[in-house]
Image (cartoon, rainbow, N blue to C red; front, side, top):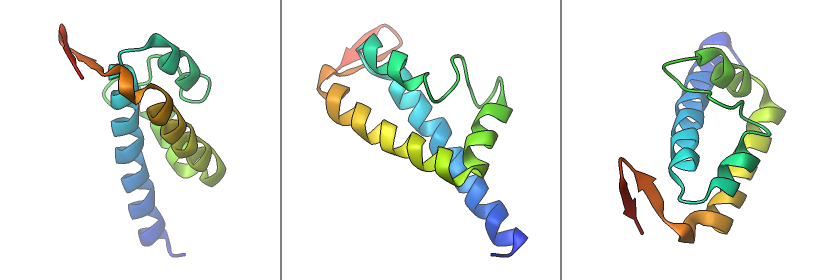
Length: 90
């Protein structure tokens, strides 16, 4: 795989990790977040600490584990709804 292609894949993964992180943080069940931070560092944020997301995006195994965890958590806690800016959306 050439560097340009690898760079685009890493960029796409970074974007997905940031989106997954936002969704997990918005789930209306703190247990999901507590499980999430076992893989994605607590307080990781695309604006605050890009290195955390980049480390995950560059590591094939860690990225795969993160994506699998996201799917499991969404299946387990998605029915709890989402909490966004003082509003619960079910």
